[in-house]
Image (tube, rainbow, N blue to C red):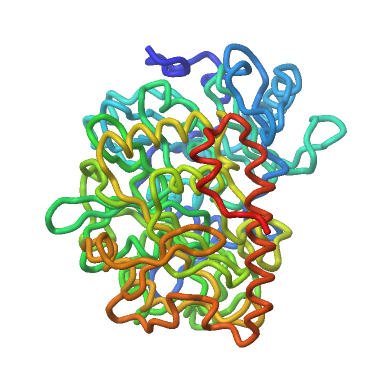
Length: 527
């Protein structure tokens, strides 16, 4: 049996016993509790809206992994902050005492649509709306499955419990602590629901490679012919938007595994950014925001009408809804081996082209690099785009070294013959503040051309610095858009911006001295 997977409820689970546990409620019951407890309010669309200020994004500096054996020998400690077992135990006892005095909501569900790689998870939440969030976002068991449910991991979320850093060994009042040996996650001091979702993703990133499954921070969809496609990318690059395509069936919007049988969704729902959301631009997501959905930090008027264009609270407004709210979703959310793999980036420098074909070596280079511009609001304190490199397009959620995931991806790409493309959903005509965001209709046209196979054989031009293969033409997209240099008024400024970005890539890749020479040479050239 894989380490960390157990069939019986552990002693520590029973020790986190609330004063009153309310278990596995229905959606209407959870909505009623949330409203009665004044945790949230209903919008005109029937969705529940909750506020999470002052934390309206993830708090990566407040996330810890407990450093105990045997997991300690495997963890990528560079970016993962350790917490000693003794410090964790003291914090755990304080949380357990806190929980004993309170009413808690319990949801038993699954992470993993493939039954052979399914993790049984128990969530205990202080807020009813958080329980609705996990009910809609994770995989909901049938009544028969619920009788057989035995938690293999547990998440305890107590937003109103604030840590004392000098006493609890944390960096602030907030904490996200993952203990692989005790199969337990503690979350406190933050109301942002994304912490719950990403803590379990981190757990899956630890467990799945032990089962031969590549965990991926990507969305996935399926064509009429049954062929699947993956969209890797950090938050704000378009994973959810581009995978929610009325012409294709949605497998999932954010987290998947790639095993011997193909692709499977980790979740049973979607968690989409909804800043500037309109029905015209994103009809599937817009129509999914109805009764049972949860929206975070969206401004509503006196008539409870949500204003998705208002970023007064945060740019990182969010909506969570079950997968079956999407009309053409794949249920159960599994698919075959992908035919196309797309790396998404939102390049705020205005340098990268809207689309480029990648050689296998370039694919590995860009997967390890994981370049994008971090957009405002996704993390606390980020107010404008920042150039970042996030290994495997998900470094904050990787407990193991990036080479583990990269090696697995390389094997699977070669074995199944998937083709790779880089698609930039960021800026063109200049950097952020000067240029403009690449047109979403143009991006959709490019994605359709990629997934239909139309770009596999078109004439391409290697970028003189990055070496990536830029198509000369994409039907429905102006030719000048395909070469970003042509969209800049000041060509010398573009050349300088490209040089600086190339140097940033090269410097970042120094973190991977074990990468092969072929992969290293597939990156941009200095000078």
